[in-house]
Length: 332
View 1: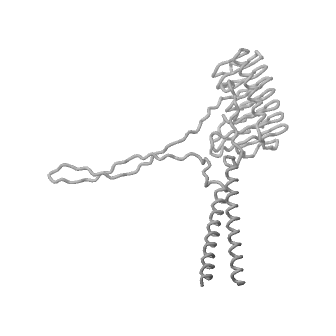
View 2: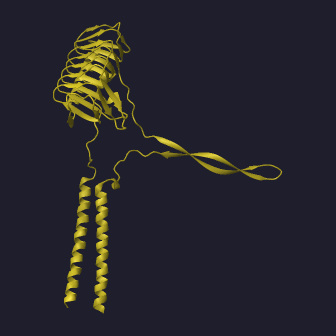
View 3: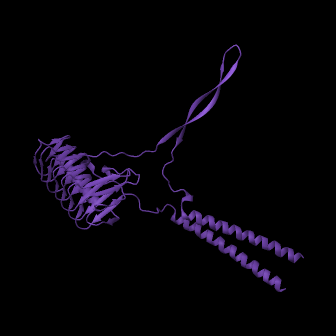
């Protein structure tokens, strides 16, 4: 009698275990439905919207002054100021817009771009000097001044669309011979420097990205920029510099072809018919899959559900085995 009661209790316990496991699986399914589509990490930053300023290599508010044989590869704009000096000997490979409606619109778009860059979040706080650092795509902020002594490396991590935004609370200053180095697919067209007051690039600086200064921008002798130099309110001053509007390479889905050899039979007419095998090449397109887009097996919830389902199955199997044993003993 005691054995029968103990067995009944064991069977009841196992049935409760099966019920609990089933409830756990149902709860997990509800959680999965609730969080479906929620990204694990924040979305990548889009480029700062430049509007009509995109075609300008230089844009200033008060004056543009050049000394030496500077080369401007892109448009030059000034508004509301009217004084552009030093061209020649400087050369502009583009169009000069001085105190006209085009320059006015460009300044309006510059204000929009400046505010866009200044408002980007979330931002990672960096030390005042970026020299010696390697940075991933994202937004970087210094509440006061920002400096560069030596080399800062911007790593696109294999993504040519990677965006870098730098927010300087006051000034941006580079030391002589400093470099902004792009690697891992990073492109100058996707690098933006929002500066709360004025920018100064030291002698022979090699710079990349679009400078959005609130006040002014000064390039010392020999500094080069692949990007843009823009000042909302003040002057842009050059000294034997080269500024080039960057081009941007976009990514597309690519298809590669793999050649697979196949064998066909060709009959060669002779006195005695002979079949001579020849090999021809058939090109079979192999589509390279795009980046992961969130298959169900990629998340931890999928593996949790798989483990719970397996445990549920084992528990159910154990319950069935137990029932057969009890039935045999009862029958005996």
